Image (tube, helix red, strand yellow):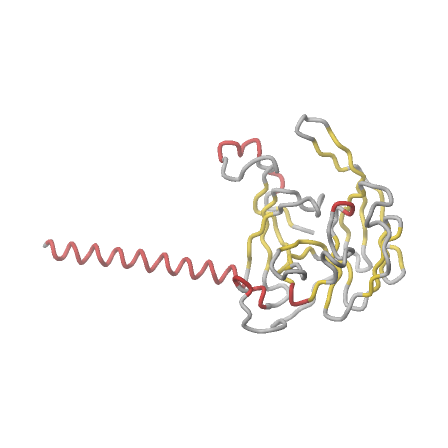
Length: 251
């Protein structure tokens, strides 16, 4: 083969490689925009359902698409297309209404038109107490290895969705509230770690969440690592990865 032919073949190979990379990046971008987006859990507001260090996929198509489905929240349209309202009990990622930029993840408790109230740590929806049954404690270990027990309960919403909640403090700051009337086109969100969650109970911090601000529904945990460990410390994975949580479906 002549030198010119070898150069031409090398140039073609480079172009093919670049083309494959571009196609792969475009495919990944389309998947992220329209299908699934990865998120990680940085706080304990959804313990015990989600732990700090969980990495999960959120389905973008579950509730249709809004401007917040697009990278950087590009304001190309208003409202939602192919819209479907979330079900009560869904675990949802949304943009914080206060800045429309920060990602929050909470559970949908109140639908448009609902009246929501907390009294002595019991959730009321439209004047009726949500059943709350004591179960085994949630146990964590601190850095010194000592165990800490936290009261865990199972709540069951009117539509039959059940999930665990923690109650760390009797009559804590968010355990007694006013009655919140959820406006049309908005939702009331709460964290499962009731005494350690900034959510819709605090109107100046979160408040009612517009439908447009919903990003997607939490679906499955694809990776989980101890909160004291760093993701990139691969050599620590045998001990730091929570193997039992991988491929755990979020309820």
